[in-house]
Every structure is written in C-alpha cells, then in structure tokens.
Length: 266
Image 1 (cartoon, rainbow, N blue to C red):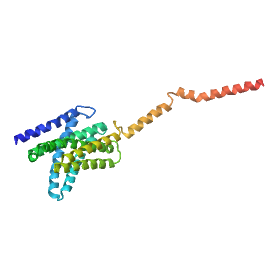
Image 2 (tube, helix red, strand yellow):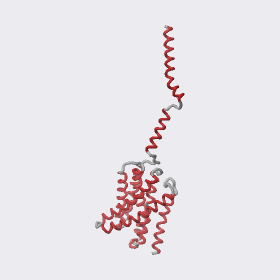
Image 3 (cartoon, rainbow, N blue to C red):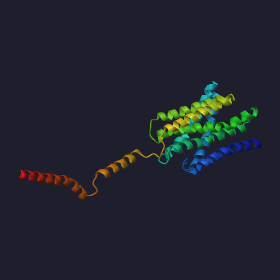
Image 4 (cartoon, helix red, strand yellow):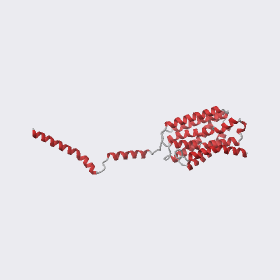
C-alpha cells in the first residue's frame, strides 16, 4: 500500500508542476492563489463526480450508456467549477486566461483518476505500456475538455452571447470524453490518442474563432464612446461658439459690399 501511494505521488508531481508554472504567468492566470483555489475546488468536485459515476455503474445495465453518462457527469462537474470562476472574475478575465484556468483546474480530475487507478490496483493487470498510457493520457484529455468548456462558457457568461455556446461546449467535452472512455475501457491506446487529437483540433479551432481581450461592460463602453463624440462636437468655450455663429454673417456682409461696388462702377 505504501508503494502504491508513493507511485501515485510521483505521477501527480508533474501535474502539480504544470499548475504551479501556469499560476505564476499573468498572461495565463489572474493570480497564483486563484489558480490553486480553483484547483482544490476542482479536486473536491472530481471526487464527487467519482461517487456519482459509481452509482451510474451500478444502475445502468447497458455498458456503452454508462460510459456516456459517466463522461457527461464529469463534464458537468467541470462546467460548474468553470462557471463559478467566470461569474466571480468576469470583469477581470480574458479568453486566454479562461482557457488555461479551465484546463489547468481540470487537471485535478486527472490527479484524482490516477490515485484511483493506482491505489485500487487496476494497473497491475495491464502490460507496462498500457499501464503507463492509462496514467499519462487522462491529463491531456481532462485539460483539453476543460479548456473547450471554458472557451464556450466564456462566450455566454462574460461576453453575454447565446446560451447555445454552453451546450456546444458541454457537447464537445462529453463527446471527446466518451471516445476516450471507450478506448480506456478496452485498453485501446489508439482510440484514447484519437480522442485527445480530436480535442486539440476542436480546442484550437474554437479558440481561433473567438475574440481575445478584456471585456468591458456594455453600458460603460457605450458611455465612453458617447463622451468622445460629444467632446468632438461641442465647442470648447462660449467664445468659440460665438465665433462660429458669427463667421457666416461676416462673410455675407463682405459679399454684399463687393456687389454694391460693382454696381456703382457700372
């Protein structure tokens, strides 16, 4: 048992190192404390998702359906964590930070999953390469699905776009996770890798289609534009206003005088 715990810790260290690195980068994270707080919340949610998955496994008779429901269940728990984060920091966060926070915090699901596999001895019945794959592959899968959900949730909860973005993000995450679960259940490295590859493509293409930058409140943005236009139109002082109003009269008088002079000459 002690050896199993040691192995679980060793496999968790690289993931914790990734979280530490991203948490110190301002372009990827709001702050280290925020990133680690969300990571801890994600770990708690991953344990809760594991309990629900156990119930699904007991009461679902069709194996494929249980794999789909398990994937959907975990992605919903990720979604809950991401929404909490976006709602709290919606005026401070941009798209790239949302993507990395969503992905990084969902690495907690990979840490939880690795501990479950190692401590329960599930890996001892697998050949070395397959056992290694089962420990390595959950990390990119959870990171990618979390990032995809964060990208689409950002569109609705921060940019206030259609709620359909939320459904699209969860659908993508669940589909990728389901393909991965099927591959993991049958120890098919190709299918697991395929799920991760598809996830990378979806995440990259989705990110490229979205706007990047800090979000202003619509009312503040409109007010700022109105103020700029007003400053351009309004005269700076009353004297300038009088000068502008009187200038056409001066021109008119000059024109009138010139016309009279011409008439006298005739």
